[in-house]
Length: 449
Image (cartoon, rainbow, N blue to C red; front, side, top):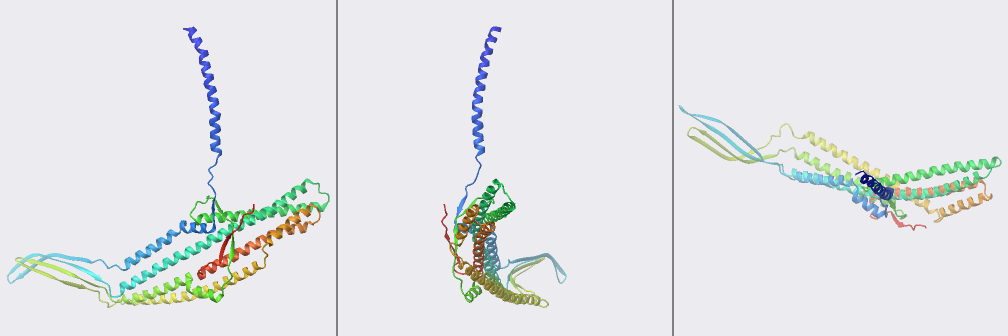
């Protein structure tokens, strides 16, 4: 027994060693597989959109659209309620009946029942339906106005993203020049006060350029977050916009724009509908001076001893307009009508002022852009690059070098800001006047390798 147990120990040791070797061989493979799986982040692909596709998705997926859909549905439901008749009224009585006939008396049960259908005064239901129709029109105008405003906002944000990206690229280019130059100067041993001061100027300018780059990046991210919100996407959704350039139409005549605004402006149309609706409310208040009439059949039965009396007839019920002639309601509705007229007039004057201001801004910005050469920014960029090379050779002073870099950035920002302001003025005109064709179209821009 002892010899057998001793012989089995080496075998067990060999088995344990083999098992340990297998585990050591398998564990690294599993660890490597697990690390590979964990090292691969779950990054959603970046979706690329054209400007028109971005607008179409926002108009389809914006969560606020449901609010205006529900408003239209509620207005249509109100129209159904306005055209309905009131429910019939069922009334009845029951009691004990006792009658005397000479020296005799009789007792029994007396009861009656009647059904009355209220009928509004002629024209009242039609006025209520007309008011409900105005509610539907107001809801539809609100929906159209929101879609137009949403389209303009998405286009403005998309152009803002592209402009911020272009600004960021220019600032990063200038900051890179200053950084490379600073590193070269620090490697040298600045002898004297002038090289030391030039180094400090370059460092300070680099810091300012980095700050401007950070601001441009923050503006880009803020616009992308708002775009994701408008199109009903997650705030972390990645979004890429195809490069496009705005194409501005020549400005329309101011008299033409004002005439279009008087006809197509959403605010004026809303005020006009409200005025018409208030006129119907005045007519309804006057109509409510007259009472509603309730008409319907009635049946009564009376028993007293062996006597029984049955009555079948038609009942009519109406309130007597002695003390309440709805005078207060008529005065209140008339006052609201006067307010609606004043609101329409004030809104018309304000819209005309806004149209002229937007037209003036649009004309001015187009005039500014007309003075720019198509390759002005490229010329400034080349000048900044030439200044960088020649400053390293000592042919350009520090003041000229720094000024050219700043002017390059100012030129890029100035042109982009002018385009943005012209775009905002054009969108304001489109919203105010309801132009059938947009003042601003887009064209794709080829991406430089």
